[in-house]
Image (tube, rainbow, N blue to C red; front, side, top):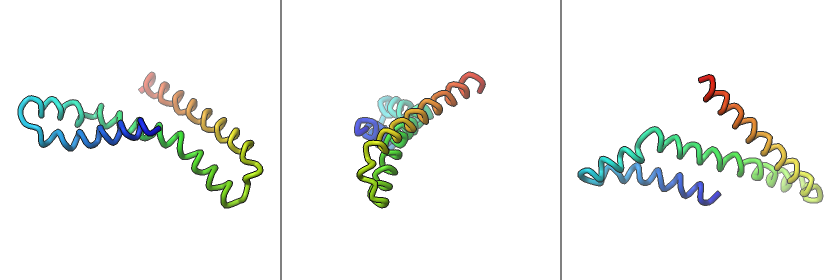
Length: 101
């Protein structure tokens, strides 16, 4: 997950740095990192990170507030199962949108 966040952050920083590079290298860098493809990739990477981290963060918060630590293994299994199903359904939705859109 740290690699995903680092890649998205690096892409964002390169997009802003591209404005300061001169000549052909600057134009090439601008095309590569300031395009819709680059920002779409950054958004995809951020969404992937959120799909993994958010369910675990919610689980940890609920376990702490509700004092559910004895139930932690069962809650973790349920969170992993629902996060996996959610990710698969989002992928099906993306595939359907690409096919019909």
